[in-house]
Image 1 (cartoon, rainbow, N blue to C red):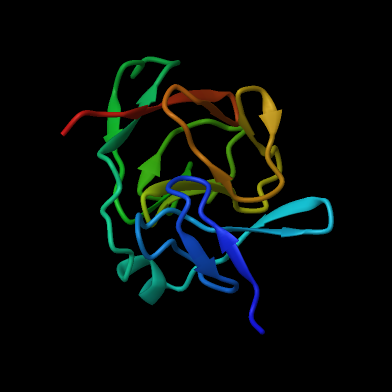
Image 2: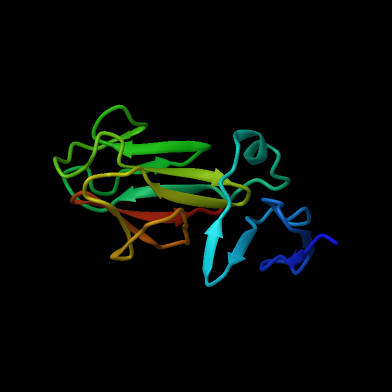
Amino acid sequence: MEKKIECVRCGQEIQAGQAFCPACGALVERIASQDVDVFAATQAEINAAPIKPPCAVLTLMSGERAGQQYKLSKKQVIGRDNAEIIIRDPRMSRSHASIEVFGTEYLLRDLSSANHTYVNNEMIQQPTIMKHGDKIRVGNTEFEFIIKEK
């Protein structure tokens, strides 16, 4: 018999192995031993999510362009070169981190950068679900993750 889990957002019963809740589209988390492991998604799974994510932006909090906003979409890489969001920061890797839509959530991933990625001053070591007001630091550059009303 296949295991079922409960969606933390809406309470819907979900078949083990599903990446999204079929009722609300929330990212499903798998609890293995003591760790919570966020499922890796294929682009087809991301595109099949039943609910669209809220509109979100990254606001640059430091430097001469402080206040500049970057509207987030499917997947965007943050880096000093070869990225959708390019910041001239010598402590930032060429492709430092990515933010991608996963169902109704935004996931931040460190892309094996030399100087790591931080959320609210905590180094991330796995994909991290972003929340309104989270502070992201890549290199010496800080952003704020903002959910906007549509």
